Length: 365
Image 1 (cartoon, rainbow, N blue to C red):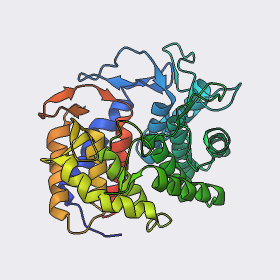
Image 2: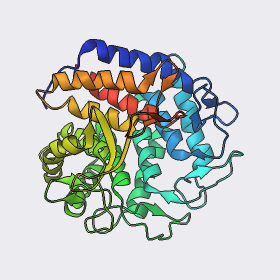
Image 3: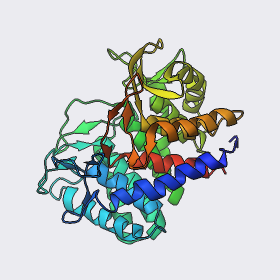
C-alpha cells in the first residue's frame, strides 16, 4: 500500500466538523426516542422530515456510526439501543431475516428481504461485536451470515439482490451495489475474527464479479451484469471498490483488484470534473447524470489517499469537500451539474460514508 499523508489542517477540520457538527445531529434532533431509531432525514433547520418509514439499513448504518465512535460520550449507549432496535423492529420472527422497512407506527411496511440491508446488518454487527464482544451481537451476526448463504447465494458465486418476505424468487438477479456492500461486510467479519467460510465466500464473490460485471476494455465495474440493456458505471462506486480491494491483503493482487486499479484513471478522467465526482456515466465516458453527491466525494477522497504522488490532489479534494459540502449546520447531500445545491435534507445514512472516509484517511497518517 502506498502511504501518502493527507494535509493535516484540512483533515483535522473535516474530522472536527464531523465530530462536532454532524454526529451530534443523530444524538439529538435526529433521534426518535420513542421508537429508539434515527429519523430517516433532517431538514436544513434540523427538523425531522415527516415520517413515512424507517429502514433496517439506516438503523444498521447508524449502529456502525456509533460503534465506530464508542469512546465519544453517549455513543456506547446509542450503539446498544440501535442494536436492540434492529432486532426488535425489523427481524422477521416467522421467516427469518430482516424486513426492509417499517412504517411510522413500527409495523412492517416493505416486507421484502434485500441483500443490501442484510449486508449492512452483517457489516454493522461485525464491527459492533469487534468492540463489545457480546454473545447476542455475535449471534445476530452469525444468523445474518447464515441467511445470506442459504437464501441469497446463487450457484454462480453472486447473490440475488431482492427476495420475497418468504424468500420467494422475485427475479431480481444480481446488482453491483449490494454485492459490493456484501464484500465490505465480509471484509469486516474477517477484520474481527478468523472465518474460513466467509473468506472463501468473499473470494468466490470477487471471482464472479470479475467474470460477470467487469467491462473488459477499461476494467470498469458496471452496475448491472455484462450485456444488460442500458448499463452504466458510477465513479463513486469505482473508487469505493478500489479502496476495499486495495486495503485488503486477501484481495490485493486478485484479477478484480487488477481490473479496478486499471479503471481508476479512466473513472477519474471522465467522472471527476473540477474536483466534483459525477454520478453516472456510460462506458464510453458520456455523462448520464452530473449530480455531485457527498458520498461519492468521500469515496474518492479515501481512494485517492492510497495512490502515491497524489498529495496535492488529495489536499485539493479535502478543500473541495469542506467548501462545497460541509456547512455550519451539517452538510449538503447533493449539488446538481451546475454546482447548485439540489438537496437540503440530511439523510441518516450519509454519516456512514463520512465515518468510513475519515477512518480510511486517518489509518494512513
